[in-house]
Image 1 (cartoon, one colour):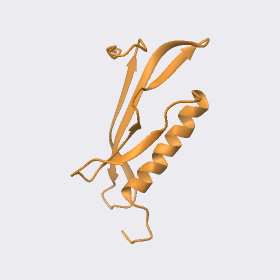
Image 2 (cartoon, one colour; image 1 turned 30 degrees about the vertical axis):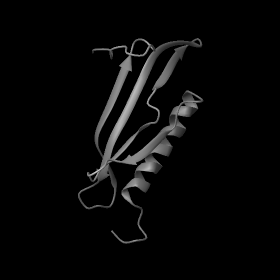
Image 3 (cartoon, helix red, strand yellow; image 1 turned 90 degrees about the vertical axis):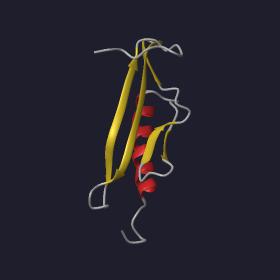
Image 4 (tube, one colour; image 1 turned 60 degrees about the vertical axis):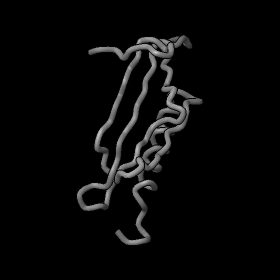
Length: 103
């Protein structure tokens, strides 16, 4: 990778910004996604900080809570951002400590 190419954290932040724009279009005021380097690893975590999640409403009333996170790295050629893993949790309650919905 040359010095004029974006770093892993820069690419992950673009991804985080795109996620934020998409989510805030549907749920205005949602906490933005951020990209942070995972110490001692060659990966970046993309998630909301604080990780309160996205409250999904029906007729203005909260019904579900969505929590999403991604672990990203470079692809095998170190050219593109790759999502190594993702977690999507849906909670039937917006209360703290609620268990995720089982499918």
